[in-house]
Amino acid sequence: MQPPRLEIRNIVKDFGGRRVVDDVSLTVMPGQVTCLLGPSGCGKSTTLRIIAGVEQQTSGSIYVDETLVCDGDFQQPPEERHIGLMFQDFALFPHLTVAQNVAFGLPKGRVTDRVHHLLDKVGMTAHLDDYPHQLSGGEQQRVALARALAPKPSIMLMDEPFSGLDDRLRDDIRDETLAVLKSEGTAVLLVTHEPGEAMRMADEIALMRAGKIVQRGAPYNIYNAPVDIEASAFFSDINVIKGKVQGALTDTPFGQFLAPGVPDGTEVDIVIRPQHLKIDFDRGGRGPNPTPEDGTAARGVVERARFMGASSLVEFRMDFDGSILKAIVPSVFLPKPGMPLWIMIRRDRCFVFPSRAAT
Image (tube, rainbow, N blue to C red; front, side, top):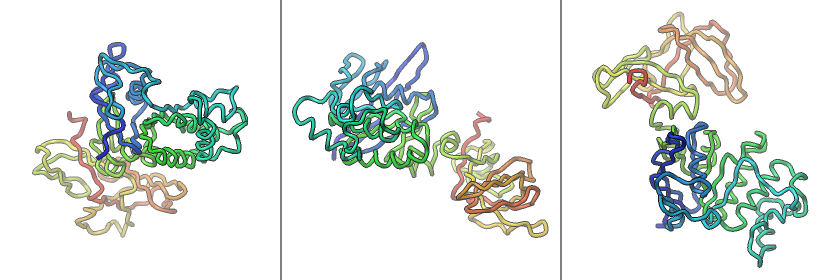
């Protein structure tokens, strides 16, 4: 089994009396893309700077290819860590051509071969003699990637590298960048606050909050088995239904929900994403019959409906407590405000968490 390309052990960073990185541990394998995902200010960019060597940790250690690069006593200079960097600002030298930018910092020798090889990989050989101001944002990003890869880094650190691109370009550039990085066998640690970007690019997501990694896993697992209500809400809109546990069950207007291991009397939040609600029509004041999969239907009245392109968003005011629930329906479904409809909730798509309001 291959050893990790990057290993972070118990990194802590205190700044101004405040802990901004709190006991972060992480491994990234060769050719793997790991995303540090979290809201602004959660410590993800500080973690990246510590790995790069431009910020010093308070405690903890970092290893590159099983070699110590820093701990509480030892700090290897950034230029000796074999780590590439890509940030929001592409930071190309305006007075150098594309080829000169990619070649910058390379040792003498087979520079031309390496430059041509990388510019061919990123589709920029036609722009060898152009200057950065002559390039589009997407083209500048490709050149920045080639320059970061030129010295053959073991690890690539990327801090929101696609945020400056417009939406139409971003997906194509991300996919192209990922293909090039994987073809080079580079271990990638990408910082982003966008769940969609993390889901699209990552082999593994490390979700950060308040300086800590609160959950790690493959995108599918972290999306479908969130560790708490905040984790579920970070990836998409959610609906929350309140309940109280008795005998490992929670009674709600939608029927009973299992809450194994939760003590009796505990208030819980039952979380479901809008795309997992089921809608049925009103039949003279009656809804569909209960089923084991979907429980009991509860009636709501349409507040508003909006067409979103591939789907429709419908908001309901529920009869039982006046709360608003949102449903996402494929294609076009635009019931008029005031129309009564019945909602059912898929049991296999629900998460039950102890209520934070009760703790």
